[in-house]
Image (tube, rainbow, N blue to C red):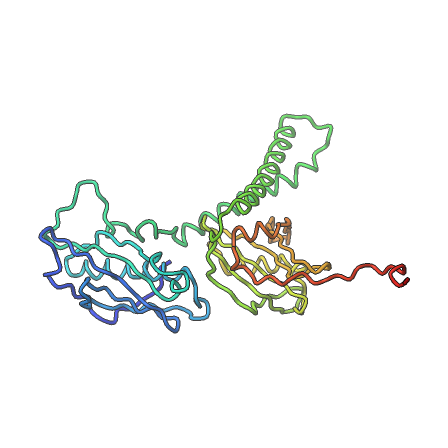
Length: 347
């Protein structure tokens, strides 16, 4: 969703900026400081047409590469409504954020707006930006209500499938009635579908190009409760190219409290509660294992009400393929001493 905003200067577009066909091409640009965006709309000569301030949580948004896109979305709503109040139309808003270098993108946003006055004659069948209810493509995302409804439908279907999977093994092997054979066939189909979905996710991660995930949140001490104890772990959230959220919980040897593996159902439940309208992928990350290397496991929440989760090991290069070098500064594997051999003491 776009960032909330408030207008601090009235939008003013001089008549001389419009062409004989009733069109004005304006620049939308903004900068971010202290968690606040200050966005202006100007003409190429630099005449100020207005300014809008958007605001957000500076901790959650710190250096977030997706926030310039959200700032442009906020500018869309602002310009669309502001020009409509003046009898004008917003025909197009094109994001130009990719014009900035990677190190500048968290702090600047840029777009181009095409605005029309009464002299403009619309082309038949063409849908303009101000006719789109939410935000223009490619900025448009599904609304939270739509995402919540889709997630509720998936949850209900999974619950029905779980009931079938639980009932099928209880059938008498000698029962070959039509109903029994049908139940066994449906259960087998559900198992095959779930396994294929896991493989599809693994293949998608394996085949992903670098920089397909954008970091949108990170906390060094994300709190959770498990086994009656409160602990903290590092949490990072990425927005994947397909729209899902990927949450990575990292555990180091220095961390205290219950291990995330032992209370993963509680960890997963809290993540789902924090992001109820999202399709969530959870990754358990350990910086070191008993041999000194790091491990990644994809966590599938089969039934959070009954505390049933499933782990699938992920290769580090699979994770790198999706999250690039952003996901962690990986520590070098610790040296494990070779087994003692008395022959080594012989001269």
